[in-house]
Image 1 (cartoon, helix red, strand yellow):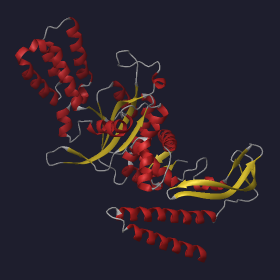
Image 2 (image 1 turned 60 degrees about the vertical axis):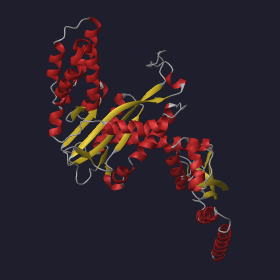
Image 3 (image 1 turned 60 degrees about the horizontal axis):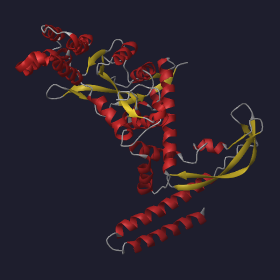
Image 4 (image 1 turned 30 degrees about the vertical axis):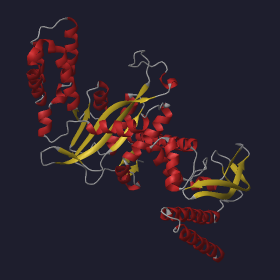
Length: 452
């Protein structure tokens, strides 16, 4: 140990000398000194980590369980290079072989979290964050520029997608346990007064193979995207000075999936239970009016208040006006203002009565009935005056922003075409990042327990 300490001290002295020389190199002298010291400290840290790992070479006796009901025998010590957040480290560890299964194993790999991979857990987390934030080529460049670690673009992609897939699988497994009441998340203390769930969907550009046989909205009828279903849960405790509700800071958690509405419903239910939906005084779901959203909410949380996003309702009101504007002539703006006032008070009967005054026939009647149907089918969800009196949100802006920030900013860049598995993995990582603050609270071991 004395020899190692002397070597470390000598290395530090050498680094100090190189940095001092760099400081006399002109305008970029400080930057050069910083880079010299960083590279040296990474190398030094890598050596320290290697020494620590060498202290336990993973020999667990002449035989160990292979994991498949047999025993594997010790063969020899074998080297494995692990890329870490400090640089590459060579691990010399015990290697076992199972004659029955015909495969080898190193118990130390499993203990360190490097079984089946040569990227350390620390470097994996760094790569996940970079690859979730920017395209893979940029992520690899960021790792090199900011952390001094060099990985290929393909390796960054494969590692991030593997991490995202594992995280998504874990989330779905946990959701199944929660909905089956085999895993019981303990509610936060104190339980929030109001909890919201806001649901929407957005398209993700896919490869031709992923959309083969699917109908789309393009002129040729072919699909070029697949829908990602997204839900965000958040809490509310206050109103601002103007009487509008304020979303609690750092209370949002996100879930997303390419699965069908039925499968997504289980994820929503599990997340709702985890966020104490069964304990809060006021549970509210907000959506754009799509039937699948309300079917999902009714099936999972039938007691929840359902609200159609006011912005979408106003968009449909403008579409309704277009269907009858040929009858309105110069009174269009006045008629629209009156209907918007009806909408603000949730007076859907008044909107219907005003539309029925026009003697429409043919295609115009069909168009008008379709738009009017949107309001009639969602009338109980459009009592905006009452909702506001209760201090509730009536807009879905948080999930609209989520669709843009979680899916759009990363997966909809020019020229991008994804496989379902690849997109699902990256979206899982981005949902985890977007939920970081809340996750840090609710995923600690003492906030959930398994039932007997």
